[in-house]
Image 1 (cartoon, one colour):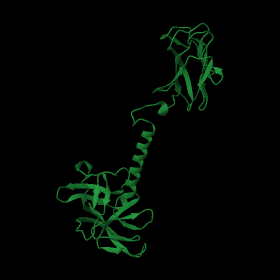
Image 2 (cartoon, helix red, strand yellow; image 1 turned 90 degrees about the vertical axis):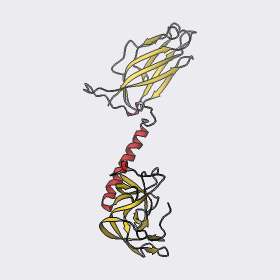
Image 3 (cartoon, one colour; image 1 turned 60 degrees about the vertical axis):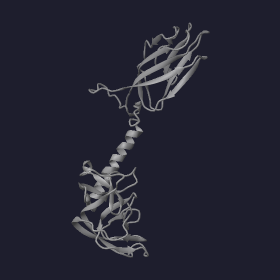
Image 4 (cartoon, one colour; image 1 turned 45 degrees about the vertical axis):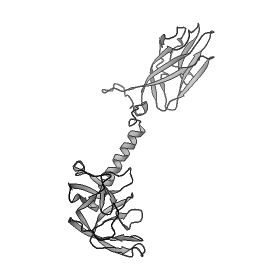
Length: 294
């Protein structure tokens, strides 16, 4: 829809009135939605723009198109007004008592247009002939804006935790307290070891983690005598040296865990030392299981 270019007979139930100074080059048409632009503090016609606070409907046309900011003021009324519905993003009965958004100075939309539109007010009714009955009041704009901001922050936080993408990682796992009545979730680190000479593989942990189990899965060829995997906290051993003198596809597990070393600090190094002592294949996958702790 096009913005107003003349008077519109906007039906309403008014709640109060105020006067708003208009910005540079602004025309407020009688019957049109007028807002405060928080970037300047001056009045503008309703439009697709963020940072607008809907103030009400102009009851007379005021032309400040040739003036500077504040040269002219318009009287606006707060209340419930029948506004037009944007056909490409229409409100329905399901939107009643929910915030709706400004499309232009006489039209509202159901959504914020991917964070491009400001709140117009609260939808109170929908009528096929009259359009949308919107309650426009400066008093409720701040609360609605805060609620919408909180919802957007929650959505952003969920996206940051990878849950919206359908991928749950250890990023959101809470610490597991001693004797916790609810319990906690495990975190798992997978370290692939290629067939190569004796070497260390370091993983710098972002969170403090207590290692609770280590499983080794042989992935290629057969190991040889003296071939081992050992998990360490930095340079200090957590597990015993796990023999991988085993055949392909066979699993081996840590036989012991040093409780004095099993907790790796945030920023600490989970080190996997693979020792190749024979002319055999040491390729394997090391699965380190643990608990996030405080």
